[in-house]
Image (cartoon, rainbow, N blue to C red; front, side, top):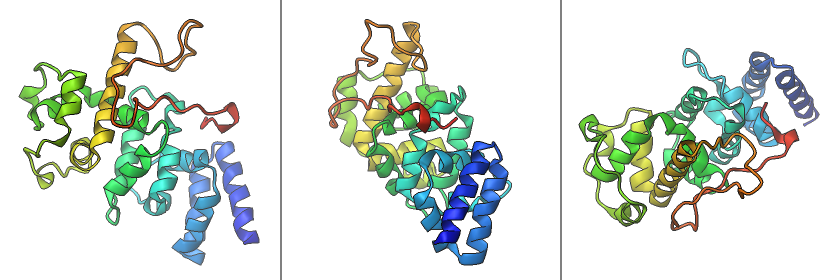
Length: 250
């Protein structure tokens, strides 16, 4: 155990110094010498922001032992912090999510449920889909990913809520791309409330953008920092996670 504590200290120090490759190598060495279970014990004691720092440097040319072993709960806690990197294209986020949620031994729905159970989970998923918002709206409306359907009328919030339990028009194996289409299908038909909540958060972000608000900045004094959204089965669209400066992932 003392060796594990030393490794945790070393890993945290390497990450703080910006040596993500060195930190991942130290964790991989532990797995090689003591086995996967030993690494899982260490991952459970690392701060979510440190796990995130390693995971978001995902390189599809090599397997990351952290991505292969992180649990749904550990991953979810890290994922809700990712917005603090202020990656406008969310490329790192999508690559990281796809690498973990669609890994060979994983049940993607377990990861989605873990994400949905956390404050900020729907917002993190909204960031994942940010570049595909129109496609997600079309999927909500038509049940297909036909690009020609992307420009039809958007469902109202009430229509979106009412559409929760329609039957799939396409089968999962038709969209099992290990990317956003498969994610959208699983959300809509396996995690229905979270799908609606995610889409409502996307709409709120779009309205904020149209109003000239930047959700990465502090709200104006007369603004309570919340965007108006329709009610969902969970009560309201998940607000942005509030984390202290010392928990910042930067």
